[in-house]
Length: 354
Length: 269
Image (cartoon, rainbow over all chains, first blue to last red; front, side, top):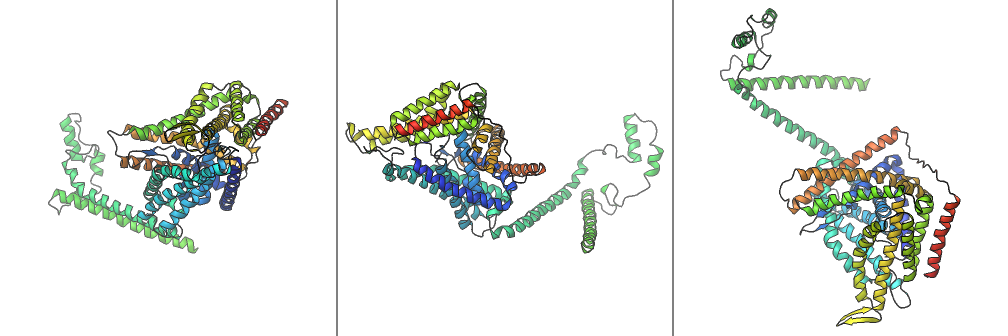
């Protein structure tokens, strides 16, 4: 869809430069209202991202491949103004540095892909996603449809620009001076490729990215989620914390159930000997002839644990003893954390009232 | 894993990086364009591209292509590079688009086989389109090959582009290569951990995930750059150093470019 130099007449190029200039001016003005210093690096990095995504050779259903534009995900994450600027910058670099798209046609290319593409993608996504939650499947479908529609509308604009050339610009003998095909050929020729490959590639990448962001980084979807975003941001946070807490409880319970596995290990952990075990180990190794140190013998009786060696005296089964000890330990830690939390909250309330 | 998807994408990345390196190397050589002020190069070659699109005569556009080749030779740009990077690619793309015009454009028949007719107007329009695109892309390619990107950006200031836009262009160009390298590394590491052939759906999921990680990294990078800019006192205003000085040679160059462009427009009207 990158129109090279020579396909459009200078007057067509001038018209689209004027149209794009209006779009760039409005987008820049809207973004300046936010905070320019914040926006400049974000737009630049996003333009670089769009540039790289345009180079992805996406596998499509049917065994073919196609290139996406990345305009839909830019419109969803940055909003229309940011997407217009980011895509325009990416298209300008492609034209200036890689010769992909012309200099005289830069205005038309930016108009079709960056301005029309971003606005259509944004409007379609908002319309279809409506007030659905950030993590709903509806948003994935909305991104796919928005991508497909945006690419095809942008391609239709390019096709019309091509198609009007022979009627408007030809010499006395009727030879077209620029793009040679009339609308009746230009539109079907352009749309066949976009209704199949290019539109599908954009739909695949937009839907895939939204699905990925819903799981990995949902806050990036907030900018264009409207009123649903604020509610969802809280819900996502609560859901994420509830989910992670649930996982934590499951992990703790599993670990507690697995504690009897410690019985399977032979011997004593190195350095954790009791005086009797130390004496036994020394006699077996024949390396220590002297009895255990006097200090160790004296201090070993200083504290007697309620569940010595994870085996409460009132429990006959060793495995059950381990499990009970684990439950007791976890319970003690939970109790301690609840007490600490209560104390901290009371301290915070006092601080805020002071 | 299919060669089509990962291989062709990484080959595309590598080609872009090679192209950037080649540009930096050619730009450092001595030559006609390199001896001119970057502003003269940018404005002069843009004027010639405009002349290419304004010209209505094939002979004039062909002369402009000859001018482009002469400038390339005098600027130490390899003709083989131009042939491979510009002429063949344009011919394979625009040539395919232009070819049916030979048969479908109404006009005076010059040859006919049954129902298939080649018209004079068809031949002329197809040739004109290919020639025009070849010439314009040759001009932009020799500009890029002979001018470091930083100089192109400074020269664009002469065209009164807003400073914010120049800053974004400069930053984007910088991060394009960083993200290309990151994406390439991601594909390489994924490929080294994959045995067998992935189905189409798996490949699409992989592409989306790679793009997703790249997106997260890009946003993170944008935030880091913003903080770095803040720490250096950036408040939105951009100062661009302009240490270019126009010499008599530059004025001669600019006048020559304008003279050729004006002559082409006049003769090709």
